[in-house]
Image (cartoon, rainbow, N blue to C red; front, side):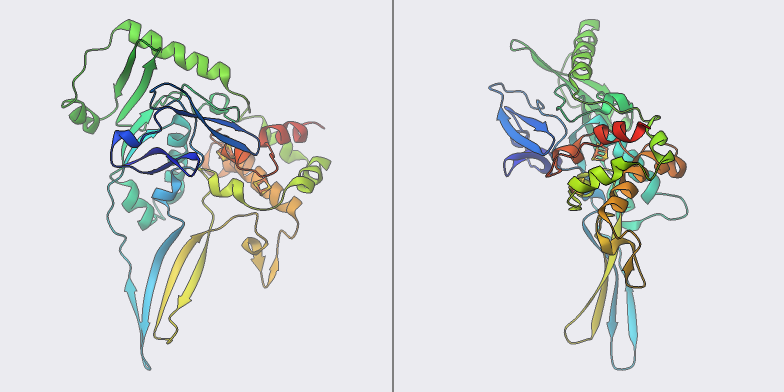
Length: 342
Ligand code: SF4
Ligand code: SF4
């Protein structure tokens, strides 16, 4: 079972074995380059916003073995690598991260190029989503149309109804598997007042979101790749790649061949990579994108503009992680506003 849990002073998705490991009594304080774990003094289970890390590492792990070969003095024998079956339950996943998995599905489950590692891990995922009622200052899922309430892609969707006297969960059943689980859970039928309470919490969450981005407006920035704003943001960007590591939709990778010291075996691994590294675009020994300016432009325009051409939607779901995890607090919603100006 993978769920948000407290680890190393953050709330992050990780394996848990009981509900006691959920981040009970904690929320987070997030802003550009800023993250703090904050006690709430309540016993709410889901009082935080999107976790510091995304869920993609469980579906497309940072390292995946692709091919293994064994050699003798005369032969090279290549062994197929069959990914181990895994059956995850994702508990407490927010709407933005569900939308991100929907985008990853289009990449890794494309009919003509199914990725075996992703497909094996994705196939059995049981999704217990949670309506996000405590968004952070870096969140903008409402403006991107991906949250804060999950609309599809779940087996069960919970809204935590908490006001001191009352602590209940409103449950929406999204699949037969979800219905089968709920058959063993005691409760009472929801009434209109429960739906109204959930809707009111969602409305408050939308109003509390710290940022906004129009998913259809950013393409204007693409009209001027020479805008001085690119140089300005590049002057602050460290090209560290943090934003791409935490982004739930970034999926770039590189391959590494690892040979045994005795020379009798080799393994080819896929490892996460980032378009912010010079090596990522290296051709014939030289990077195509040699400057931070060109790398930041590639990242932002792919995420917000050319993703529309490739996949028919924005590549950003508004989780805000790239803003929180940027050591210098670069905020793509602010940058795109500058770039959209003439
Ligand atoms: S670009 Fe930033 S806000 Fe958008 S999905 Fe990626 S990490 Fe989240
Ligand atoms: S935008 Fe921020 S997180 Fe991303 S590469 Fe630049 S400095 Fe690192």
